Amino acid sequence: MHHIEEIQTKERDITALGEILIDYTPLPDSDAGMAVFEQNPGGAPANVLACAARLGRSTAFIGKVGDDMQGRFLRATLERMGIDTRGLRVDERYFTTLAFVRLTKQGERSFSFARKPGADTQLAPQELDRELIAGSRVFHFGSLSLTDEPARSATWEAIETARRSGTIVAYDPNYRPLLWINETAARAQMSHPLSSVDLLKVSDDEIALLTGTDDLERGAAMLVDQGIRCVAVTAGKRGALVAAREGMRLVPGCPTRPVDTTGAGDSFWGGFLSCLCESGKGLEELTLEDYCRFARFGNVVASLCVEKRGAMPAMPERQAVLDRLARS
Image (tube, rainbow, N blue to C red; front, side, top):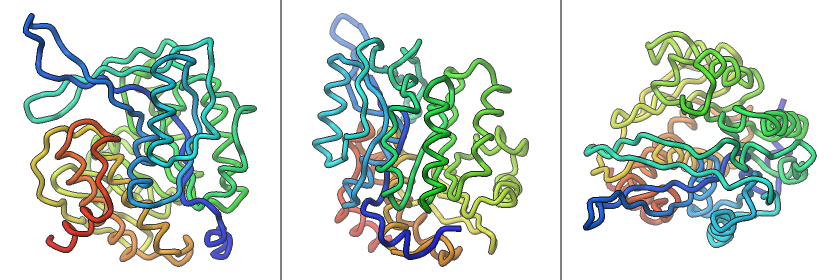
């Protein structure tokens, strides 16, 4: 059980663990007809922090990069955004992880990864900064750190540290089929942490993978039955389905003109968790009404994020979110 006073006396809002990488996102082809890519900082947990930091929350990142040009660029990017990097390790044996993104005309993405292995998978349990986790209101992680050892063991160690410290545990399963041996292995590893999680952000297509049902409401209810306090199912333009012990509600999306959906779900979750931290409430006090308010804020954040290219560079300022929230 998380004690209210513990939540309120934590010195940091959100610490996240997981992959930080380069998203090479496409620009128009060159004059010679060759593909052109722009170097963007990315990785879901880092995107969530970038969003929260832009919204004024105190954040810290735990992960690993290579001792290379891209790794140095990523560290500098986090520091420029005001994200604490004392938990970011550098490994000279492995390259920083790279993702190449292709966009459809609708702004949807497909991926190709350079990660065999990427530095992000090589974070070892003994490299964890446990004090960062214990001193945070929220600890957030994703499933990409569960694909390979030693990062898988490090992630489990971090979850246990958070639970022992009265830190709220948030999880985004974030399924990327290319990074798993097969769907069965993915389902097993991605489902494993569910019993240790307080807050879950899941996309509509991940619900089926985790629960075996395509019915969003039924799937969300099944996840809440496993002991999760709040399940937020992101469903694109429709908004987010928010489920808690009291019931569930669809929180409508915010009208937007998407240019690039990279980081949309991460920006939603960054907004959601920022709002939760701002509320000052402990888990025991939070209601369905509160969770829906956090999701409404998250929807507005995401609607602004998708109107710009890239993920971290597209995260909106607090005032822009408040202005759109007031108009919608």
